[in-house]
Image 1 (cartoon, one colour):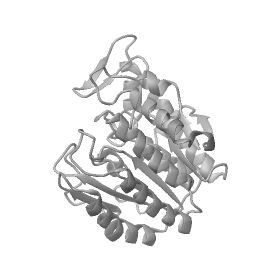
Image 2 (tube, one colour; image 1 turned 90 degrees about the horizontal axis):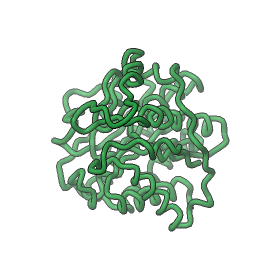
Image 3 (cartoon, one colour; image 1 turned 90 degrees about the vertical axis):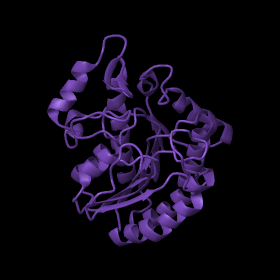
Image 4 (cartoon, rainbow, N blue to C red; image 1 turned 180 degrees about the vertical axis):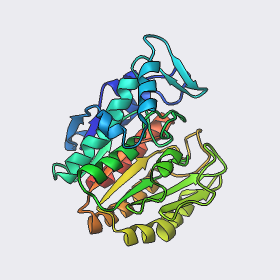
Length: 304
């Protein structure tokens, strides 16, 4: 299943900004060129409900986002994160995509799902937008799975070049949730390396870490933790900015690495979660590398 929404292309933060609407165009173009699109069940993402969002964010924060939504132009949240008149709606649909995807895979309508949405989410904190993120899409989807579908154990796998600080804060100490991540360090948001909770499998790696070293991390750290946790559902925070062509970071992954990571995690899902995986787009700013990497990720999920 492939979920997106037109509003996700209307949110923009200026022609100079790397987190651009063209990211979704690049993904769609590569999916068409690869021949994968006809095999995907496409669905328009609904908006997330207030109830679902408030499992992760405070009422005051959600209300402030709506209040700060500009009628025209931009409202600056921080030097890198801005709202335009469409941002609030796009954020609702980005979060809603994850919820709808969880419903589909838990209900048996789809084996797995990819959410081609923006703005991204994993830096969004309980009461703070940051790092291009407004609502924490993967955390909202995870809480929906726990509360609505009664999932007892789930895993969040975050392979973005930046640490998913908002997601870690949402679930630190929650034994139902295992979060596995690698991330370039030292680097924005300069978190994840102190004394993480026992349910956090954080692996900071230095700049210029290549795919071979990342595969060692997955094999030696992530997979034993994932197998021991035996998740009933796995969620990807799928950021592709650790690609060697992406100037946002300084890591050295290529498409084959993303396919390999996806395949390893899918084997865990097949063993413990009836194959149930929901993947949500996070970073990835070199348009060509992003499109190619998402194709590799989706092709592996779809077993095509």
